[in-house]
Image (cartoon, rainbow over all chains, first blue to last red):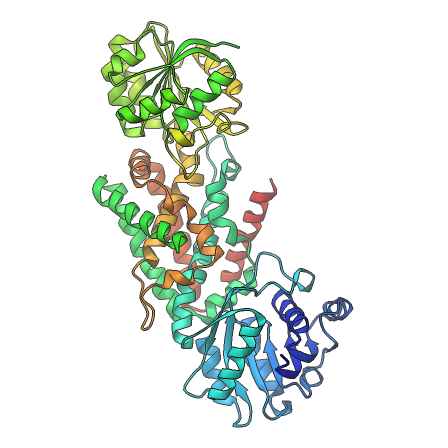
Length: 289
Length: 289
């Protein structure tokens, strides 16, 4: 079912490209324009049939759009939206796909005029690959999409957005931006920081006869550090836009690790076993669900 | 090629059972006896054709064996070996499959008589499954086996053991027990401690409207914490038998994590990105090799 006449995708990469593809496939919008910094990417996206038109001028790209989806890095959304705000079509709905929400929602709520609508979204999808060439219409299929209304959010805009993401194929979950940032900080951002840290701990670690201990890495280390191969700029931005929840979570992790370290240092068998047993139970339950 | 007349497996679980199977398949030994605490397991192993005979009396199990392989938990090896030492066949070769080596090698070297031989082994194989039912002749195929000779090791015993593991199907690597413990501490033990700690950090984490944040876990968290489902008793023993290397590694990890935490706290964009970029590069190289 057609929800919007013209959708504008800001940032036509893996997420933006995949969203355009599924909207076209499911006939959710009439036309799709793209904006990006890289001309070659935009040309490729058009050539692949992912978008209908493109422009490197933000004002041109958003012209007449009644749905604008920011798929560009978290740090670029607010400045770009502020820049283009006077040129948006009255009544248009603006959302994003960013991994951090509270700061963004507060800043956008403060500048959004009465006759335009913003609701934050976080479709939990992605992967190690990036770029429009990796985009596909199935990326979002069956995944969760968190939408983060605030006290300023228009109920009808929220409802329209929820129907849109549902038709994209996602399970839509509603929560506050603050709650989103704590939860995603815990299940996504913290694990990334830990994986980066684990790899940095092992890099350059030498023994008397071995100048690269990583060559002995097995499946365990490889699986547990896979996400350390993720984009450093994206993760820098996510961390710096979700500082307070992450500092709390890192602190909690540090206290937990210090308990394990103390058990090892003081040869405390029972509390160490209990701690590992508690983790084992939780981890098994996590997969069972 | 037959290397030994009678092999005795102490602990007929996943590793012991798989070793027995491959020895039989490749015709490396004439007969196989099993020792274990659990009668049902031993009966099952015999019924499956994994072992020829078994006994719950250690002295009976090792009688006439010219190869004894300890596949029981790390903490049980030294006491059991000391107990049965007066009853071993002169000239017999003793080894093990434990994940920690230095303490074990030192303690066994101190008690081993002139006419019997010990060399530590660590075939790097295993998996989430355990028990003799999960054993299979291919478990060791193509994997690395570290052997850890000391200054007390007989060169001919070492050579015999290396040929044995090679015929089992493994790539044999020789290093000191101390070096083994640092390297495995880094690529295996530390990642397990970190995975247990990550899960314990998230367990019981509640937000205002969510009593179980883990239900939002995606592939990233699941992969990075998979090894937290491992056996808590086995990992307790490994940690407490490899204390000094692990305390050093945990300390290094804690310092790395604190650097990342400080970058986030002080909003330091460039050093945070550099740190993530360094990890990304190392992680990509790890898989490329």
